[in-house]
Length: 202
Figure (cartoon, rainbow, N blue to C red):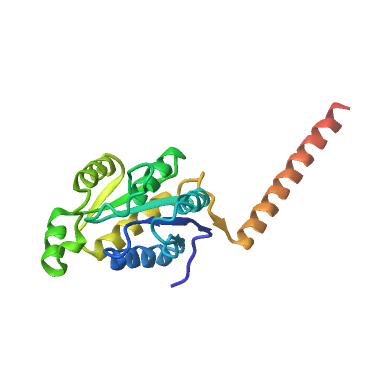
C-alpha cells in the first residue's frame, strides 16, 4: 500500500527487553506500517551508567515516546534506585514529550506465568513496579492482552498524534520543496499587493 503520509515521526520504544520481544516487534511493525520511524535501545547493555545519557539524546531527538509495560520492572540504575524504563518515562515527561503507554492486563500476566514461569514477573522490586504501573495508568495509557492489541493501540495513537501540527517529524524533500514554493508564491502575492497599494498612494 502506498504511503501518503508526508510526515514521518520518530517513535522511541521503551520496555524491558527479554520478556517483551514479541510485543516490541509488534509495536515496531505498527510504527513502520503507519509510515513512521521506530527507535530503541536494544544495542545498549543494561547497567551501563553512560546509557542514560544516550537514551536522553534519543528521546530528545524523537517526536513521540512509547512505553510498553509488562510484568517486570527492569534493571535498576544504582544511583536513583529506579529502573531504566522508569527513568526514561520520567525524562520523557520532564521534557514534555508526547507519550502514551501500553500496559499489560493482570490476566495476561497470569497466563504468561503459567506458560513461561516466574521469569516474566517482577520478583526483586514488586512494590516499585506496582507504584510505577499506577503512575503510568494515571496518564495516557491503554491495556494490552496480547501483541495484536499493541499493534491496534499504536496504530490508533499514531494516527491521532500525526495530526498535531507542532510535531514536525521528518518531512519528505518533495514536501519541503512544495512548502518553499508555496511560501515564495505567497511572498510574491503579498509584494504585488503591497506594490499596487504604494502606487495608488502616489
